[in-house]
Structure formats: structure tokens, C-alpha cells
Image (cartoon, rainbow, N blue to C red; front, top):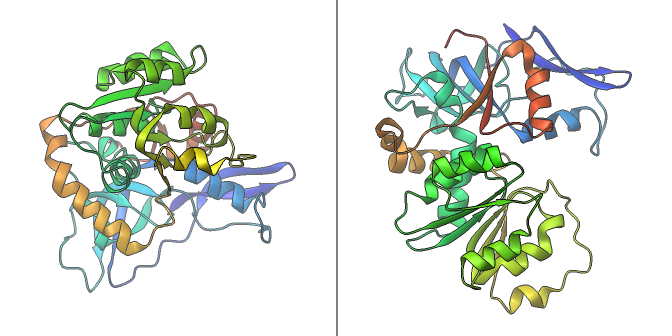
Length: 336
């Protein structure tokens, strides 16, 4: 089969489209003919680790597909212990790497049947971003009626999913930040109530203005260190601060912990990819049971930015590095 590997070069690394070994199937797995796969920042991190930018030995060559954590496709083979799926089923879900390929292994426990009416490209834009948004908003953020949520990077994949999920709860207010009017306008079309261009405005002032000085009940923070002080000013008393990224750095010097304590803030740091298989399975099942029908009914919609051929994975990742996307960047090697 064909797939994408990380190939080392004299100046760093590149993504190469070539023949790769087919995945090995365990008894509880599904073999999926991949119709589409999502491009995520976790793929960029995996690529950097393989290039030796993190601790550990530098591989001279990676001959198997490591990139790709979410896919949609058709079940072509099932393990001996699988009972809930059949050959020919259309599924989507999280995989343990290997999504940048023609075929991928998916644990049956976290596979989700694609909601009726969705194309494969729509389905591939769901798992990573909607599950990330769901676990943060509902499990960690305890989102409920009447809350105000500040979502940074509102036009990102997770951001566009989070806006829509928040608006499924009555009487909620969504405040978003983004870096262009075009992105803010798109966020508004998804239901965002307050739009802030972080390049031109002080988002703390706008948040406090929109909440009559109270602050946001929940903050979804992809940025980290560079937003630390402003997020602390922007959060309400007893607010929940969800740290899910560090695009603005991971080291905050001279943190005054009492500033968190006196506001009774709950600060949660979390990632989805490193979670256990059991965690991902429980999250997948709960999310699909609660919101699967909403995709069929049009209350929720996957946001697809651009679809690249699998062989163009380098260009797809570069688009993400340049922060040009609104919604999900996808790869496909099928007519879908």
C-alpha cells in the first residue's frame, strides 16, 4: 500500500509518499480502507520528534507510517473478537497513528459509524476536533446553561467544533478570538456572539466589557504562556480554564499562584492523543450517542478548510504551520 513516511534529509526532514507495510491487525481491530484523514498539530509534533527535535535517539529512517490520528473509511477486515462492525461499514474515529495511508488499523472500541448523510470528507473532520472540544467543554469545563465561554483560535478545527457544541446548550454566550476579519465572520456564522481580532484589540478589555466585568466562565486556551496574564484577568470567579495547547509558549515566569487561588479558578491541562484506549473509547461512544444525530439533522456540521491528495501531505502540513486554515485540513487518495 501507499503511505506517507518522515524521511530524514541533510537539512531536516520531509514527507515522502511511497510503498509502506500494511498494518498488522489484532483480534479487536478493524482494517479500514482510508477515504480521508485529518491533519492535526499533533502530527507536526510527531514529525518533530522523529526528526530528533525532542529528547531521544534520532532515527536514520522511519519506514512505517506514524502520522495521522483520525480517519474515515470503509471496513475491509475485522478481527476475530469484533462483533459490532461488519465488512463494508462506513466508520470514522481515532487511530494510534498511521492515518496518512491507504489502509489503517482502528481499534473497534473507538470506531464510530458515520452519521447518515455525511460524506467521508465530512466524517474525517469530526473525530479529533469534536472529541477534543467535547471532553473539554463537558467533562472538564462542566458546561451548562447560561455560561459564557471564551474560545481562543476560534477558526481552528477545535475552535469551530467548540463554538457549535457550546451553542447546543441554551442561553450560552460564545466569545472568540481570531487573527482576521474573515475568520471572525466565519466564527459568527457558526454561532459566535462576540468577535475579537487579537491582532488589533485587547481581548481582556472586550471580554470584561461583554460580561459586564464578570469575565468568562470557561476559557479554552490553545495559546498558553503568552496569554497567561490576560486569561487570568479574563476569567470569572470560579471559572474553569482549559489549557489544551501552547502555541504561545509553555513557560510562564514568576507565576503568582495566589492570583489563581483568590478567584477560585480550576485550571485543567489536558491532551487527547496520549489518553488511554479505554478513555478514547468511552469518549467516542458518549459523544456519538449525544450528538451523532445532530450531524444528520444539520445542527452540527464539520468544517472542512481544504482537501489535499495524500501525496501532497507536505503542502497540507505547511498550510497548518502557516495558520491559514479555517476548520480542518484533510488528506484523501480516493474520489470521495
